Image (cartoon, rainbow, N blue to C red; front, side, top):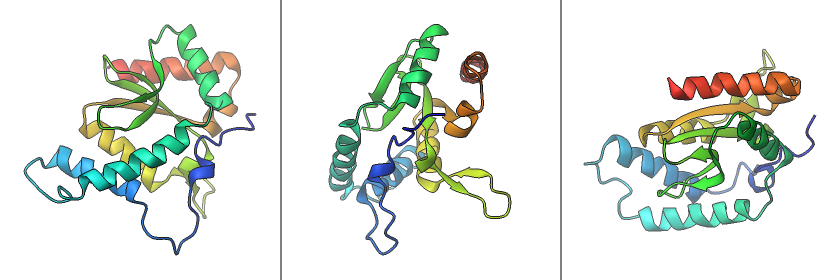
Length: 172
């Protein structure tokens, strides 16, 4: 099992009394613009929101890719998926592993991307992860996710099969 799934754990603010994170509002603003281009909501605040998002992304990008990211990237190399690690879209959104030419990406999601369902114990993607996925689809990206709990539960051979299935889904 990997001990460094902390791709963004250190940057999460778990203080429930903290003001809203402007960087996440930037994603909301982009989604509104992508879905409803004629709606001017957030238009005046977009530069401020983008600056907050870029500042947060700069903190994250200073960290070296986790072992989890590097392992998935290496397996994608073995499967001949041409990709870039930590690719930034023109909108400023960072993708874990992306092929910008085809707008296909694999997001590598550690524990910070999930909540636990109290009744079942199942992992459920958190709101920020779901918003990012929805936004990327609205911007024309095809995205699959590799969750730490599904990756760690598999042998190296089965990890490559998992990625093969996800790449097939991206190609369809």
